[in-house]
Image (cartoon, rainbow, N blue to C red; front, side, top):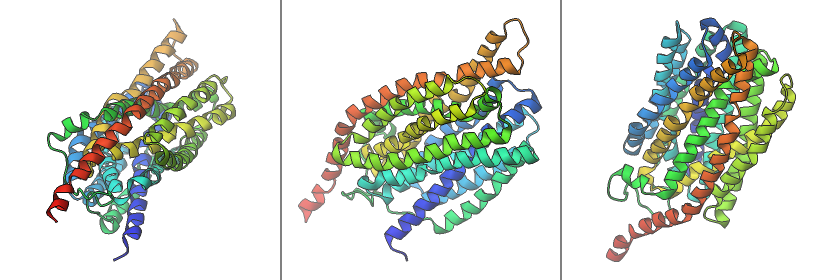
Length: 443
């Protein structure tokens, strides 16, 4: 059998691939929004509802699946989830209208709800706290890479063969990856990476009440809702914005969106992971403090990018690149913070609770809220005239300003989280140390 370091590296590589496919499949709809809208005559509100369909069921089933990840084999759970969402992604290409696509996207949400709780729990047992941010950053690199490839590949396939083909192409790799993960992924012992061997033990009481008794968890949950509103609003409507306001075609919009949300995001995760681990070694709340600083730093770039006149995609892109880099540091700072304040036996549940709020309060409102605001502002711009494509461009452009507005709140919330983190981490460390005292006294 290979040494633990080799098995941990292989497992992390598989988790990275699963996460990349996770975000590839969920982002296809954003890449092909415009041809779907035109074929079925949909409004931006309806387009937003298709994004919300995924996130609602994702959040609801994520909590029981998080508890299952704390009790059952995480390798098997992940493999089943990958196969389910991949098959349903392919079926989305057979949709006959709005409601059939809505239902298949609900099913994709069920499969993908497995990923974060099970993967987060595995990484917490594969790597110690001092290396956890970098390991989670590698895992989360699948997010921007998956989104980038989805925009680029799905946009190119849709432009050449129609939007349905983009869903068919995406389904095949997942079925293969599900089998590979089932055979090669390592299932480590729970708590194996902790300095104190607590195994599957946890503090007494309801797991949900315990998690919500941790002050930092409340701030982290609120930050997730704000961050996901922005990320899903941007991912759902960025290609449409580039097509309507800056005159790009479907393939070009997919390519630019992939660069903005993929290349910039990957750089942010990589740099953020290294910086977060370094700051964690110098100050207990260093990760969350860095997250707050980066969220504030992204705001001027977002405002300047949105203020560019229509028809200038290069200027928009050059300003949104640094904004994207800073925004993606969020994952490298918040995800390891959750692992640091929760015992190993509850980490799957903690991620599921966090994701429940993150998606119900954030991602589910991001696409539909932005879509409704876009429709309202388009009607307002049109006045007594018919809502033509130029008015739809104006409405969506103005609606996008909700993103930097919420970014201000996000920075404040992460700053508050940094103020409670050290105390919550110390409480957990004190509890873990007490678990070995009886055994030490007995010896």
